[in-house]
Length: 340
Image 1 (cartoon, helix red, strand yellow):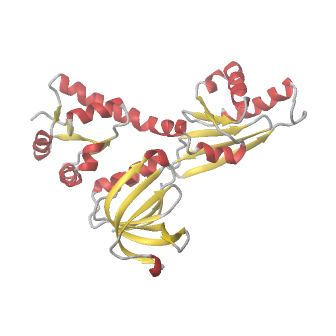
Image 2 (cartoon, rainbow, N blue to C red; image 1 turned 45 degrees about the vertical axis):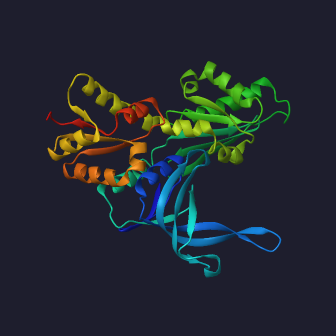
Image 3 (cartoon, one colour; image 1 turned 90 degrees about the horizontal axis):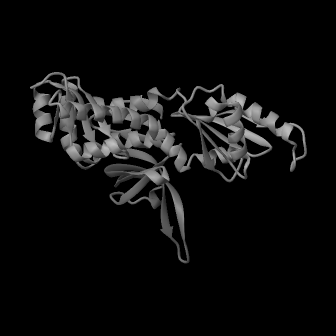
């Protein structure tokens, strides 16, 4: 996520990866003000057309459209332009997509809200994964981080005919691509492109660069080059890889909680028990299932304020993985500093 300006109570920002939208969903609450560019369909005599508008919404509901890489913000228009296309007081949905800036104004910024934005920004310089889109003539290599996409190399195969290059020329081309990929310290590489080149270079990599091959995941992409890289951004394989780091961390937290519960140790679960532990200042880690957070924001805000007062760490746990589903089943929970 890229922060353009930070002048509380307002922040102007740009979400640049699907994970940014996940963070933003946890930050925007009903009653907040969100401003941005949107589109509204208007009927003419014989047809309808979309008009570009600027809207300022008082938020009523936020929902993440995971498969569309969009955060939908439903609210009431309190300001907009052009005036002839905006009806003040009417409902409107602002779709926040990747690469588009918004301005968020909150009447109350909890420490938790700020930390969620900090988490999104803090890892902005750390590469998440490498994307490669290639065919038998060219390869484009890009690094994806939370600030966006950075093209690192464009490699062209040298020599031979376009349609039927000989084996030695292809091996030289594959070596050049693999050597470049070996320079990046990332956990995963998403490799795609039309035809069979991606399978061929993967087989070559398994034989000549076995450690590199362990990082590669193949994706079906229709185009090589920069067009293929852009196509990869909507592939389910990429979304899955982006989740892996967060899932591993969250699974560790839930497993620690369950271990303490099983031995009657430093853990409590259930809303009343967690509130009591917070009153005693005994909570070290507060774990909130994502669905509970989204459906009970007022109750969660109260919990988070108490957690901040006792300097407990706050975690909203995704339910896209088994550990998150386990937490959903037992509800709001806490890992303790001491037994009560």
